[in-house]
Every structure is written in structure tokens, then in C-alpha cells.
Amino acid sequence: MTHQEPPPLLDVRNLEKVYHLNDGLLQRVMREPPRVLRAVDYVSFSVQPGETLGLIGESGCGKSTLARTVLRLHEPTSGSIVFDGKDITRIPLAEMTALRRRMQIIFQDPYASLNPRKSVEQIVGLPLALHGVAKRGELRDRVVAMLENVGLKSGHLGRYPHQFSGGQRQRIGIARALILNPSFVVCDEPVSALDVSVQAQIIALLGTLKRELGLTYLFISHDIGVIGHVSDRVAVMYLGDIVEIGPTRALLNAPSHPYTKALLSAVPQIDAGSRRERVKLTGDLPSPLAPPSGCKFHTRCPFAMDVCRREAPVLRKNGRDALAACHLLEIEHAA
Image (cartoon, rainbow, N blue to C red; front, top):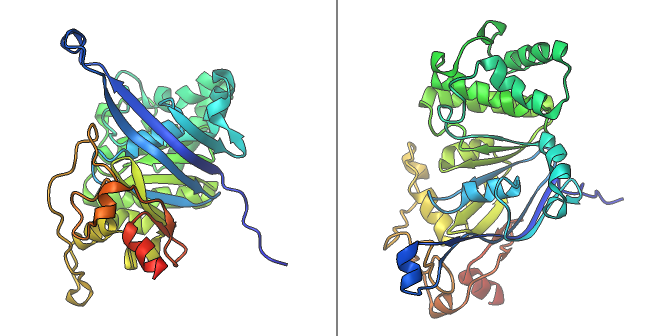
């Protein structure tokens, strides 16, 4: 009997998020068409139960927009988002509110994401109160239990965000995200605003909570070292597209896409024997308001061909249980 993989907890297909920018009166007077920002450009991926999918790419490539659209914090322009067998792009807001208990987010900035006028008890307990899943008498007990899970104490209940360090504030944000017992959590660069030593503590905490609570993560970062440590699979994003996705070890050890190779070659290596040949990119990152035709990466790619300027490549298998969108791979496969 063959082993059958369980259905994905999250299955995203051809997801698109487009913003139509209105530049105001001058634009209307000049009768110029509205500018279009295609932040997420027909992206497809899935996440298995209990898996951590790492999402990496340069600032401005659309990582956070993709994550927030998956949670419907931003409404998708088109495509489907299937969570636990249900297409959440097609359900009414009331039903979506109930599903939000199972889909939560840990924000990047532990300073901006907490209300400075609320105590820890109010911040962490707010989701319980909003969803009406805890009686008044048991709310404090559940908040205390969750604070202890993230390494804080009951004595912190009455304190306010300014009385904590950055790492402690992020623990409060994690407690708030997990208080409803979700199954899927978006970690939107949860350690990028923290000191390196504190980053290690938060990453270890997230790993422990994942094992103990059976969580599934979409983990966003621009740090390849962090992504390599926490992820089961990695997706690489460039200007709204996923250009490569596959198992972490295979992708980081033998990347296929030139952009992934360039990202990895820029990571400092301590061991001289393991250093990669540096892949130097030419030109600046194009504006997402005017992306290049064909392959969006061709203006910076050292291997660009004529076909790259004309046609956008599609994700295809590269022979290692991974997918990459590159015309070079298509030529190698045909040969």
C-alpha cells in the first residue's frame, strides 16, 4: 500500500493582489490612467499540516502582502485560498470571523503592534473577549497559562508595553496570537527588529510552541540563516512572483534559480572551504509599478537570454522535488 500524503492545511492557487493607485487631482486633470501595483502576481503554493514554509526575498517583493492576503487581512483581487478544505475567498465575513480563531499572525514590530494604553492582561485577553470563547471568570487563568507558555509570568499581567524589553514584547505578541489555539500562524519577520541574542531565544520559543501545540507556520524573513534553521521548505519571492520553492536542504545546498543563487552567494561564510562563488547582480531592483516584461528578473540576471525578455517562465520541476521558474531549466530539460 502506497503512502498517501494528507491534504494541505493551506492551498493557495493563482493568488493575485492588485492595488490601483490614484495620484489625485493632477492625474485626473491630465487624464492619465491610474497606476497599477501588482503586489502578488498569480502565486500558488501549499503548506502541509505541521509544516513550516519559509518565505524569503528582498524588501518590497510582496512577502508581507502575500501573507496578509492569505489571512484576508487584505482582500485578494483574484485566485483561491483553501484553508482546511474550505475556500475562504468565497465565504461571508461572519463565517470568516469564526475561522480567524484558527489563523493568526505574529507581527514584525513588537513596539508598534502592541497598544501602549493597554495592559498585558488586556492585550493577550482581547481575542478571547472578542470571540466570546472564555467566560469572564476563566479569562485571566487562560491568559496566565499562555504567558507562562511563552516565558512570562503572572506578575506581568498589570504591566504596560513600555515596561518590557523588545524580546519580552514579542513574547506578548506571540501569546496574543496563540491564545485562541490556532492551527496556522503567519510569522511576519518576527525577529528582524530584535537583537541577535534575543532572536535566538524567540526562534527557539517558536520551535518549542510548534512541537507542543501542533502548529503550522508560514515564516517570513529576509535572513537566509533564520529561514534555513526554522523551515521544512523554502519559497523564494521576487517582485510578486515565487521563483523557486522546495525542501530547505535541497534548495539551500543546490539552488536552481539565478536569483536564489545570488541571494545565497551574498551570505557570509565562516568556513573557507564552503564558500560559494559570488553571483553579482547588475542594475537596481525594478519598480513594482513598472516590472520588466517576460521574466521579471532578466534585467539583473547574468544569464538572461532573448526568450527571458519576451516570455515569463512558469514554475516547473527541476528534478529535486523542487520547482523553479527559469528558462535555463526549460532548455536543460529539453536537452
